[in-house]
Amino acid sequence: MSGSGSRHDNGVVHERRELRSGADTRRFTVVRRTDVDLADVPAIVDLHGSGLTPAHHLAVTGAHELVAAGEAVVIAPQAAIDFTMDKRIGAGWAWNIPGAPLPGESTPRSGPDDIDFLDRLIGHVVAELGINAERIHLRGYSGGARLLAPFVAAVDRRLASVTFVSGVRYPEDLAGQVPPVLAIHGARDQINPYAGGTSPRWGESVDDAVRRWAAHAGGVRERATSPAPSVRELRFERADGFAAVRLLVDETAEHTWPGTSDAADIAAFGASGVLDASAVHRQFIREVEAASG
Image 1: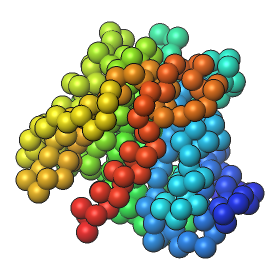
Image 2: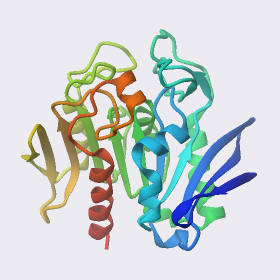
Image 3: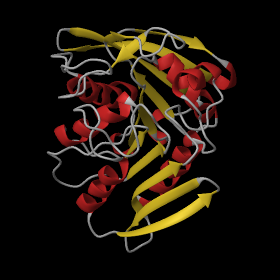
């Protein structure tokens, strides 16, 4: 493993690192405060969307500000398939999701093995950076979100939570207990439509996927709320009131990261809506951490 870092304001450093995964050299970025023990804060392993880069994703999601506040360390892995989703965003990278072709393609890729890479990455940051293995929160956007469903089913890891932004799926081979789940989606999403689709890349509806996560979690009751104008929430709550599975839908949002003001992102992926996905996820982590004691 090798890496280099560049210091920013507020004592936050962005470290660009490398890790061997099989025969490949893979890259990831660690965003951390230099005066914080990484074992003492939650770790967010955050996957960018198809055709994007870790740097773009970190900027759009406000990772620097979150880390500067001392609330988390963020690990942003980079996919390995050279892929351009939209020329207004520029060249980026895409994940190899098992059984799912890339946007605009009809046949799934044979590699790389991104399930293995993500598993190795988590093991590496725990062993080498001292991150608490029981405080790892997975988050993915679009293609990064879609990769998380088969990852959770494939690996034997205890995860603190999983968050799907604009890309919630349910893995057919899921077994055992699952961590708390948060899904955030725009009702007007045209890339990963809320109502679902007919392709291997995007089939069942968002509602169906979330309800299957809730059914697997078990012992929950469904409750619908409207936390803000144009926003609706489905909460699947345990007896103690904690929502083990939850879905937030922005009726005005398309595929863009909800709440961003990034002009290029909005031009490429549509309206960002009224919901701040980064703030919602921040609060979700606080609740998960409090519920876990």
